[in-house]
Length: 337
Image 1 (cartoon, rainbow, N blue to C red):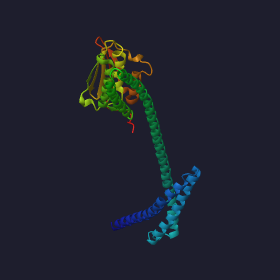
Image 2: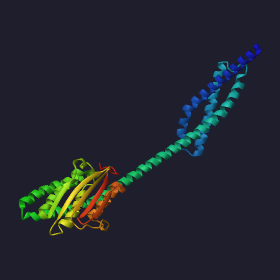
Image 3: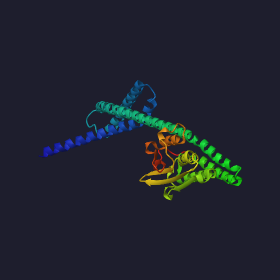
Image 4: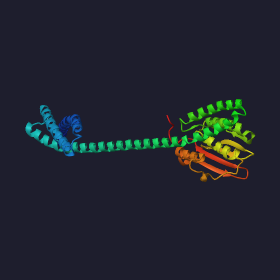
């Protein structure tokens, strides 16, 4: 019984001794490799792959040899080698350390290299995606600027023609209309600094435009605007509503001796806004609008800004014709700075 207990104690002492020896070797080699290998790897990273890996292997070999000899010296000083000759014990420890360190160390080096390449590839992909997104955004912005620039000549010419008609007959009224036109022009120029404006601002532009056209057409132009206050902050493309109203004024009110009645209204359904312009004309087929026409240009602007989420439809019945612009709550692209 006592012999068995003594043998057990001797066994646990041997295990603890081996554990301490392994701990000293592992800490010496691991600490040295932790500080030296990244520095060497960084300097060899731009070299050819063969030189890179041979340099890492040679460095790890040298670190292991030196650290193993230092660890063996510490172990011997602590008397953990027991009766085993110091050099024989160090040689055995060095052999084991080289096998383990080279296997584990080079495995870690390969893993870190693969992870670094993967991270580099991900970063490169992210940069390319950002570049593509930026290029698409710039192209979209340029296309919108081109589309929006088409609106101003029509708007300016029509407004100036309306004021010119009042110069001889009613010069004082023409002067007031010029002031109104200046405010209207300022508002329209400010609007082109952004891709969208609040619906309330667009309503103000339309009201000024109708005031000028009313001076030209008189009682032939009858209008009504019904837009709830809570919808006046909704983002809409600048001069979009003006385009719809101008189309009715030009092709219905100004084209008929009896003029026309034009109604503007806005309604919200869920997260969408519907802006409608109705007139008592015979209507038209929106798909037949020629390239460069105001409504065709507006449809293109809506497609760029909102994609398929925005629609422009024209319907007619026995009472008149209606053009409806349906918009989501958010713009697909960022505003201009």
